[in-house]
Image 1 (cartoon, rainbow, N blue to C red):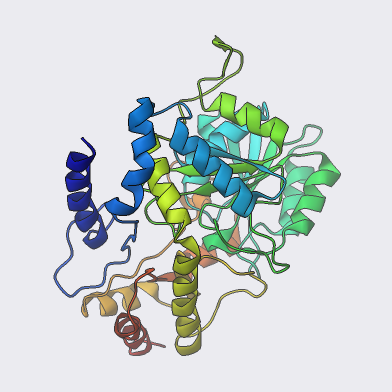
Image 2: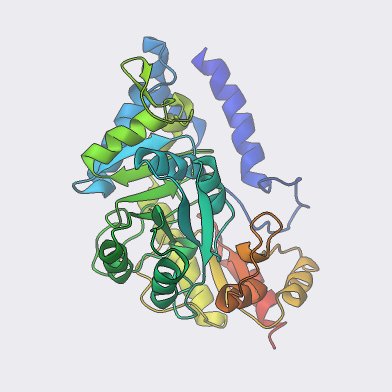
Length: 385
């Protein structure tokens, strides 16, 4: 049985490594924006043997338990690790575990999953502007949003997004949340394995940090998520991803948000490679930083570098120019959520809007060759203003 799975998995790995996520096969010689680098089947199938021996494939089977323990030991410090079906499911489960009801503050400059997770938890996202210096929640705007838009009530929670997986110290945001008595959840979707400026791994701030392990992330398993939090909240998150069940009784609101054994087996193999992946991606980012205009904020810690973001005056012109040379570039966090159809708000949030209109993202792969990097750099510099 394992041999048959290996054959199928090898075929899938070859397909995933050359296909855009959500797209069609790119032309030969082209550089897609996304090129996942998941462990080969022979690296993760041995971990799955224990699940087959136990015939235990979900609901916290042996691979999930082992991966949680290893992630906790590697990145968690005193926090507990809870694996989830996706980063979005992890955010929703954390809100449910906290018993949040009402409104949740979310930055307008983020991927839609952040706000969709709030809706899935039965809450309403309220959008807040970000800082032009950090691309993340602006402390002054956050204070205004809490104090000016909610009195006498308070928001149920704040979700701060680590933009592009940046790993800055969020002590100031934590202080604001504590001052107003509002729980702070950190959406660290692209930051797993990254370090804060003081050397701590991302995952240690807020009441919880939530990571994605989607195939597009440096720590990719296909689909998956991770919540790092304190032991008490961890148990409630674990209950929330299992339909809110406690001793067979639905004791709270919940979802089906569990990670499968198959994804956990890939995660165990990836954990043994992630440091090398981050080092390789950091080298690419450093070359981009040196040879392409640098508009990245300071004090970003040591991120895993899912991609390389930069601000330009005319992103579409550069995207078209690169596409003519077989290189796919993308725009992220666009439109800003307050200008999207589903989350539209009249209130002007100028920094989020400006960033969304001028952000351009360059591809980074864990196995990106120097020649491929130079192709991207050449396409960008040929088209600079």
